[in-house]
Image 1 (cartoon, helix red, strand yellow):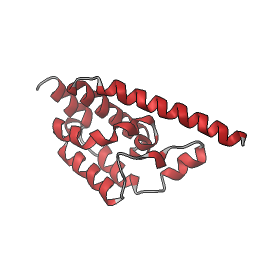
Image 2: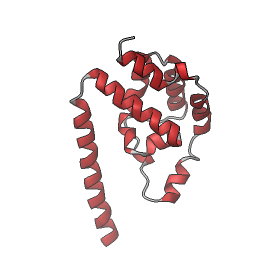
Image 3: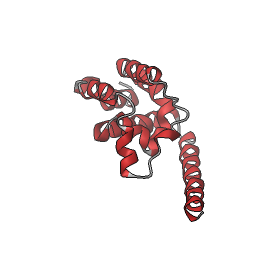
Image 4: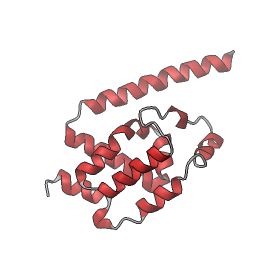
Length: 142
């Protein structure tokens, strides 16, 4: 009973935190949103891959990734991201199945889908075509 209670409490605070993240995000101007989403996306990819992006709170930005990648000119990455999500039946508006409470659950997430395929493609992008480089040029109006 106590374990169930603590799970409900954690769930309550988790939902509250997520709502606050989205509320603050929605207050941003469009270019700020692009900077936040693509910076988080690239940071998570470079640190632990697409799976890590889906596991961490950054998953809240997942519905915006493909569109923002297209806006900054990262069309091939956007296409690969969209294909990965669609071919694996991942609902970007509901990534709750990626939430982890233990290291074992975290490790198991990496086995659910062929994340290495997308990650390796992402890592192979040359600097000029990198998400951060394209984002910077877009945000500076170049």
